[in-house]
Image: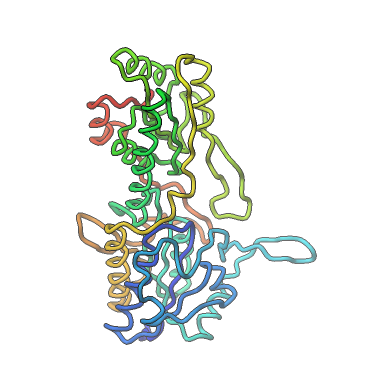
Length: 374
């Protein structure tokens, strides 16, 4: 591998708090420790394809650690190995990754550090296969990436959910209401589980534990019997009833992740309104406020450490790897262990990290009386 003098940063997929801490860590360590030049491609792989970037120096990254989102912006619609182009008035999908490689050569970019979830990191794996030195950094509020104990962005989202449940709790108590709160998480229930436990939920519905609406009713009536005439129900967007399926909010055809979940909280609310007549039942979807906001201390620190270690790994000859958090240490793992070894351009969603229904966290929640509708 030739000597690295200039690196490019890509932030792809959905935004989350902690991204700017990663950019800060990469840029400052690259400049201060290794004397490298750094650029950031705008809007993920879109910027790499269109050669749209900004120079990142110490001034550019000063004071951004706490800020949510990404100063480079992001996109989850640009898989350059399966990219939509117009030919003869029709949209066809082609491998346009060579355009990105030529753009890197033109700007003298020797390596990439790619920050993202499974779709973004699958493309990082594919660029590694083309001979581009690449290091990945795991990012998702859903905490569903395998091979790492935790992803940055998750902790800030948990704090947002917990704070929202604290506020909803007072309204539920004051009006003797049943409050149904839907949270993100795709097909995994980490946000609902940890946020729900911390926010004193009475019922938590997870994708990993199909629910029976009658068991939810049983829990509400049990609370009525011992004088608690309100309840908080946290529903993961990927939750599904026994013998049922997930609720699809929309299909986004030009996205790497085409299926968008959402609306199950509304369905649960309407089901309960038919079965329970002595309570008002209200529905809240926390939606995108879970992605934003000032980054928590944990996400700032882990983001910074990921950025520093990504540069260190790259400069020590590493490529085709991802930094991960394991046992309070940051170490490396091969990207193929994270996103799989599938074909070029095929986004992997099969290796997600799921909540264990028999695991310690679920069993602890059940021990204190939380129902999972099972």
